[in-house]
Amino acid sequence: MKRQYFFSMLLAVLAWASTGIFSPYAMAQGRWGFGLGPTASTLYSDLKKTSVGVGAAGYVTRRLNSHLGLTGIVSYDQLPFSRVLPITTPPTTVKLTTKALRGDLLFDYELSSGNVRPYIGVGLGGTNYRASGKVKGTTIKSPKSLTTFDFGPNLGFRAMLSPRVALDLGGSFRLTTTDNLDGTATNKAKDAIISGMVGFTFFGGSRGTDMLAEQTPFEESSASTDDMSDFQQRIDQMESAATQEPPQDMQEYIKLKSRKDDLDQQIVQKENEINSLRTTLTEKDQNVNAMQTQLTAAPATSASFSRGYEEALSKFYSKRYNEAIEQFNGLVAQFPDHPRVSNCVYWVGEAYFGAGNYQEAANTFTRVLDYPRSLKRDDALLMLGRAYAQLNQKDSAREAFNRLLTEFPSSEFAAKAQEWLNKI
Image 1: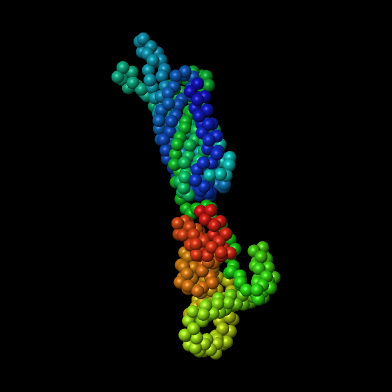
Image 2 (image 1 turned 30 degrees about the horizontal axis):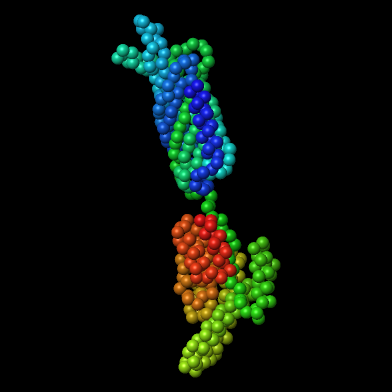
């Protein structure tokens, strides 16, 4: 009856585990781990009365792929039982304990790929054992320790409590090649050991899977004037195609992208100038003189900057990230007062992000926020949140996404920011 109860409880635990209630951490694959934990074991033999004893086990495991694993286990089990000793007068029922040191090799197969994974397996190995006890204050024991082979099934489940720690709960049935675990050979069925264990497995190495997938870099905001509607439509069509495959005419795409950035910046610049003229009429003459001075020097500077900007964008879209970073930084150093200098800083951050250097990407997107009139502030906040998400700095990522929603509620990236907030 107690053996049926043991297996019923184990099956109930497996059914409960398959609902996947633990935290959503990816199961470690292709990695080494080690663990230990307590055991509870009982003897299955010809005797009608056996008890459950406690012990301990340690193991080393290797996840071979997403489902198959190989584990080496060393355990110490105590197997209490009662039997009648005919050597005493009158025959006396005494309590004895077989102390077993077992070493097994276990192959297990996980039945699901969720966060909580039930598994089945088979193990085989050897057991060194010796029975002992006390009769009327006198210790008796087997003349010597013996060794037997054992084999049989395993079942249980494991759940990832964190990226590096798993909880393992399992049970095993090991049939041995001896009939002497209970201290007597009756030439009937071979003895067996039923054992259950709770253990914590600690995995080493890097995480097997990333918690967040990288996506295509987001593009700039669109122009807001009617005069740019056709121009913006062409940009949108090319950007939509770029999410599926690279544009057929990359050079045209890059030139249009550069020109769009230039026009966006000019629109904002002109709007700021109009507002300034409305509120500061007394400074009109000084503003006009300043604008005339700027327009006199602008053509050569603007042409040189635009050529360098287009070349750097071409390198970025060709995934030559280091070259793009170098050229954009060169433009920042050469034209520190150019209206689009913050765009260069932004694309440096995009290049670091594309190269997988998320810490430098986060630092660079933070620099973009230092330009109060930059058109890339909402872009930078979105990418800053993504960079922090890649670094698993969830609080900082949430702060960046919430800031985007607060400061730029009408931004085209607001919906994306909300999606990322829902993920982390």
